[in-house]
Image (cartoon, rainbow, N blue to C red; front, top):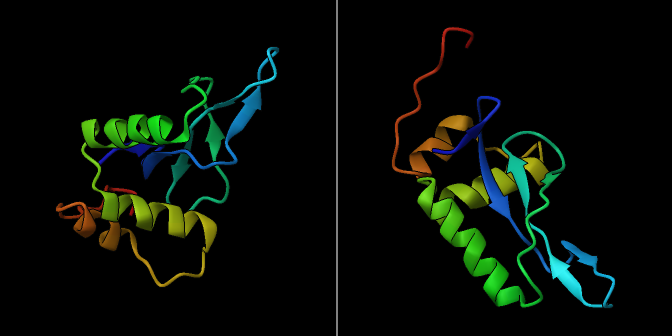
Length: 105
């Protein structure tokens, strides 16, 4: 499981995560999403002008960091809808892992 500040996290790109370059083209920039935290943290990683290619890079990053697609969906859902009936244990289970709370839990 990829963690940021102790929370499950994933990299995400949508068709709206773009910035316009001086040449007028829009480039895709992914962002990090943390479970149970509203919003996202943009990166400065330029993934080019093709959405499918940018999405493939994001999927590869998440896979390389041990994150399944099901876990990613739950992370994004808890970020967008904090009242969703999802627990941190559910995210770990979707990732094929057991959640073991730290000493502060």
